[in-house]
Length: 375
Ligand code: FNR
Image 1 (tube, rainbow, N blue to C red):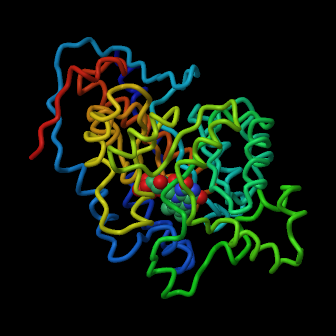
Image 2: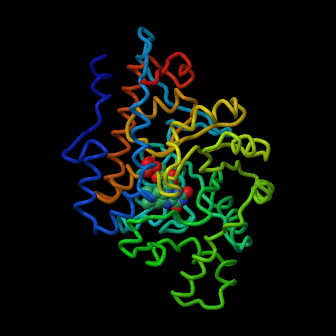
Image 3: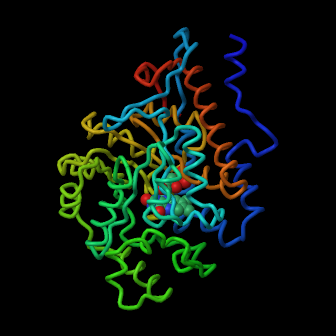
């Protein structure tokens, strides 16, 4: 008993503990415009703030005397068993935070059995990320491309590299109004640290008339801007792959229903960490409406504002099957590379375990037994 109790305590060294402390350390370490790009949200950052305040509006009514001597956090999604009910969110251009970028993050994820979602605009190619992941599960996030042949080729590459699901981000048909970046005149894509997947894409490279550095970056920018994206395309994408397809960035329950009708396999309720349309609802506040509309037909994941284990408990109690962690692991990466991400994950995993135990949830199937009340 005593041993089990001690094992619940993460191997905390002198690294930061809370998300706020990691953020501060990252800020000290990074150039102001680079840190600002990661921290900031769009517009007046209303949604960015709401992503945090939404969690404190809900209070947990835990259950007691439920025998929590062993806690099973595993979940099953699309026929795969995952050790934890959370994944690492797709974050582009991770070399901003650390030169090892996505490779360091995915190795840390593999150490703790946390699935990793690789971004279209990753700093290392999806093949290199897959190799660094080893046997650890990974999903691929797709930014639909104006040149569709490029996207279909990336889908094929992801299938070949052992990715288990495709996450199509639907809230980014163009970049949000990001004032921090505008003020700093900063575009990480223009810096060329998010082009690995394109450089390794035969179809993309052959489509270019100008293959200089500048030509490649222009090509990527033109590919990523795709305001004509619509539901018809979603059906085409679904037909083009054998992998499960999730839509990331759904907030309206009617869109959730359209997703189900289009044969989509899962939804990630997300506002892109407050970086796209400012003023939208916190993902957590949209979740109950979407859960009601979807009514268990497909899995629901949630991101935007998850910072601690108790946030995960609240999201799962409100209907999510799993959550995604965004900025927290990037701050770990910025502060100490792979070791920093490992520490952030260990803390999150252990706090989650303690939170589940104290809420009286020995395994994920018992979530229905607790209640949340709105303050
Ligand atoms: C992102 N996000 C993102 N999403 C996506 O689908 N593809 C991407 O390439 C990126 N890139 C990216 C870069 C940075 C610096 C940030 C902060 C975010 C959004 C990300 O997947 C996720 O939705 C949010 O980060 C979740 O919110 P939190 O956890 O950061 O609050």
